[in-house]
Image 1 (cartoon, helix red, strand yellow):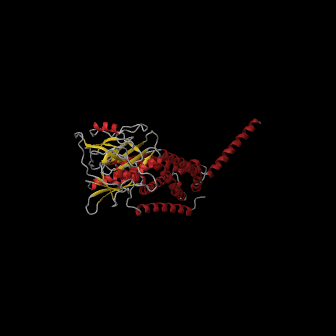
Image 2 (cartoon, one colour):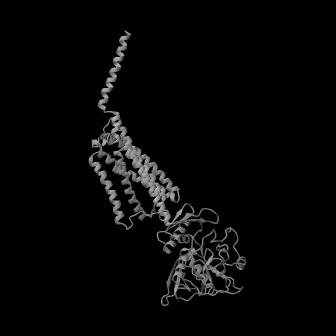
Image 3 (tube, one colour):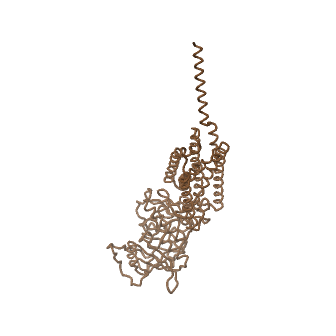
Length: 566
């Protein structure tokens, strides 16, 4: 029995409803109505950072995720549009920035270790021994309470850090904060150091300081928290000997740039967490009038002088700032501290012109694949080929809407690998139709009419279609979980196309065949390959007399043989 007209109508209505809902969301929930393209199709830069730990083991996942969040905040703080920061594998973070500004992406990938260190010695590069630098910055508490004479106690009863340091020769001038340099295992550019080695002493750092020229090839010495280090300012004009860290950058909770009321002077305000506030209060109380250096990957980005004790943890850095330098320093203080060190594993840039060429090549490849399927369907299946073409066209309509919505909601971007996934899925979708149509031919070969063969063929073909698509989806899901990079895009589009294939076959192709089977002309040998199958088989009513004649001939032959033998 054929599928009832009412049920076919319900299938069509369900499919129309799905399409209407998808495109209603496309046109009424956002202004972007095209899929988001990946960097390989629209151009941009991808930087991959690999985390390093002192013992060489994979980092803890919570540390990697925290580093990703900090880098993402840093990206947002720098105002980079449409950039993405994601973790990949056990130790990689991938930063992707669209457009031609590849240098901006590389700066974002130049992650840092932020520390506050006492200044033991500071002098201009190339100056005679003993010549000191001129201070311009100062660190002061934001409140008006009188500074305490000693280290205040913390709320939790712990003893605050109180470290005395040798008095530096003079304070140093901070330069306009530049982008941080790439991180090594122990800080940017610093040579790897055995984490179990004893801390670098002040004498060892002073020896390195004497030969430091602050050239481009000069790197800071080992930058472990307990080390003394010899390093330079960001502009290379001043070199320093710095003591062990008193506060880690991970203890900075916030940093903002703003102007002081009344004077309009640009300042940077930073806050510490409880542990950082206690350590900072103890250190500033014991070192009023001394310099403290803020280092990013071992290089000094600011070296303010402590004017008085800062018991509250909230601190102002004042000096010769303008809006740009104050904002940049605030961003470095807020986003520069990471729980891990990173090296830049890869940095790949694709121009917008090359991206456009790759998109065009992908679309051409897809068009050729679809055209070949269409030609095969028309030559082999004739009218059934038109059913296949219509189903593929509607599948493309549904896929397009899904790509637009996924791009809005989860930031999915269509890459060249994703286009390859769609091209492969064309064959998987066509396979569903081939299974159905060939099963239909088998039913007709058994002597059934097209109208009665359609529902029987669907019941048997449905199992095969579901099994094949389940295997395809499972393979895509496993590939997506285990793969990295662009391969994930291939697996995602392949799996999505497989699911949408079932939607189209169940809600459109099958009910359409049930409707077309009612038309006798549709199954004729002139218009459909199904009619040719029926013609070669012959009409069942005509087959029966032929069988009876054959049986009669056999019987008479046997009788003649019997007579002759007698």
